[in-house]
Image: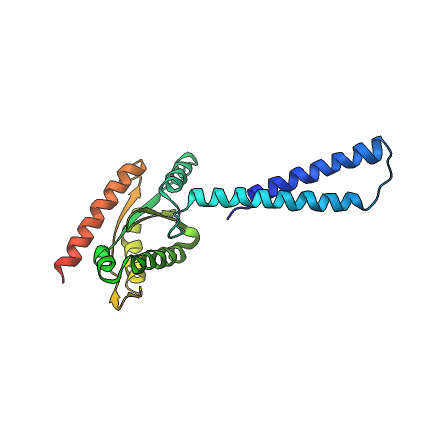
Length: 213
């Protein structure tokens, strides 16, 4: 969660108290006592509380409430900033949990929610500072890997596949994950075309894995 709201609120209080000091104790030459610090502490406490609620609301507006991953709006904004900054290339990876409906039907929606939260946490740890993840909808997650080129489809796929194969279990059954990769600008200039390309690659991945069973 960002500190922007709290820092701005505290900065306003500090500025206000500097002005208050000069107005009362320099301009009017009123005696200076300890109440000045007491009032300053009260103002800072109020400012922190207000700033915290702002930061909390800002955090929740950018996150999926169930998994804590970014929401679709935040990811779209992130990609827009990448393009405006002239970022050379990035990869879009679409993830889909295999047979997720069966997990919900067999073990209940609470178990399904736990699977989504665990997967989002695993994916966030896996990506680290290399990018961000967002819950794209249902059991689909979208990841953005910065500084990725066309070769990412090879080495990135191997790395992702190895990490996905080490996932845990849901109610005693393994969690299968299919994914598809698209790289900008080779597979598209905008997010919509890149997601379409990643979705097609995911479909090929999923059907290929099922045909091997």
